[in-house]
Amino acid sequence: MTDYTQEFWDDRYRQHASRIWSGNPNRQLVAAAEALTPGRALDVGCGEGADAVWLASRGWTVLGVDVSEVALTRARTHARELEGPIADRLEWRHVDLLASPELPGGQDLVSVQFMHLPDPDRSRVFRELATLVGVGGTLLIVAHDPSDRHAGVGRPPHAEVFYTPEQIAALLDDSWDILACEARPRTQRTPDGRDVAIKDAVLQAVRLR
Image (cartoon, rainbow, N blue to C red; front, top):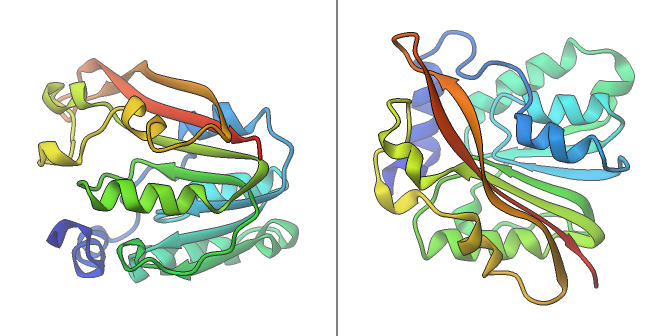
């Protein structure tokens, strides 16, 4: 479980002087959220804050949570450089999801982008996060599809941390309307400059009651 601790992620972020990630919002989040009315959003595993900043720029009030204090420091630094109204809609919090922390409910959007955990922790954490979505709110979980493990792009080394959208949908009861449960194809460039076909596992659901 060392891959899921604060120490692991702090060390990984420290190995890069500036950013690990591109600074752009995740494409599946953009595709889903562009059609939603802005409200309260929880960005789970927010990292350096690109998704949270993009949501705030679209009018969302966003709480970004992450296990890495290094990542959150970078997110806060970036937020201070933004225009006032955007920065005012952003909050950052250090959270270890494996410790079952208390997080605010009634969210209009709970976004979980590329969080890879093994079971049974994965199922428990995702069930807990689903309870934070308010009626009419959206749960969006995006992951690397299991078929990506051999695509030649950087992926977690442990097979047990991959999952399908169907596995996540099975955690939800009949109080949810599942809008998307699929592996969406796209291309990604490998370290040696090749474009390869990969898939994002996407689960998008709306709480009905």
